[in-house]
View 1 (cartoon, one colour):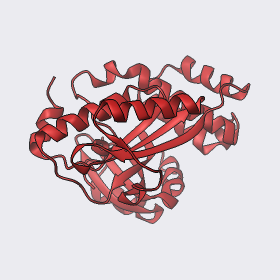
View 2 (spheres, rainbow, N blue to C red):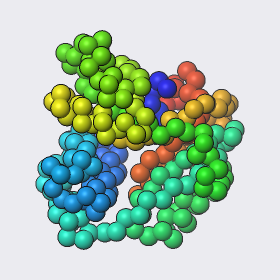
View 3 (cartoon, rainbow, N blue to C red):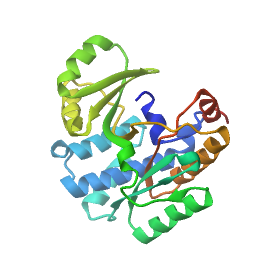
View 4 (cartoon, helix red, strand yellow):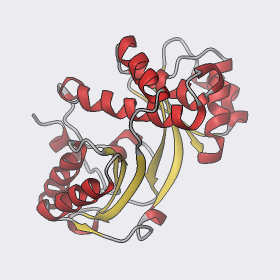
Length: 248
């Protein structure tokens, strides 16, 4: 399960945040819209909104932008609908695309076009979902927290696995324990840098370097699409492919 973020997106490390800042903000705005639509604009009584706002803070989204999104959603705003698409890249790699769209026909057309243009193939919904497990994933700044003590403290909230990536703890939970873990960390007054449900592959597919390059171009094309929220894959990230990800 190690390296959870690699399954959701493929992007260049150098300057990635700056290059994709507007896309990241757009994604969070949509999360805010959905949260307000489903649970109202009072973050004290809406855990989903509180989570979305916390994720906005994690990427340094200006407070004014966040408040405008909440206000607009509360006054009706745009009507986004969740959509998912499943298909294949080169070498039999599974690609799972999650979208939030205010125009279903546009989204279907654009997703199909990306698959066709980038040598992928669009499949039927439900045909690949069994290849991924939905997990709660939390990123916590490590700071002064002791790993063993921290793990012991949160195990009753549904902890499945605790990893250390750079200066962060990464917590994995079953989907049904996502809310419990959110409440536990909030009660412990621990800052969560990012929290979301992700699709983690239960097995990986090894491909050639050429197929890996093709799949990276396919995934990057989806990431650039305004309707796409998340892209997941089950491509095995060998050291050679990792080197490709780190290139300019």
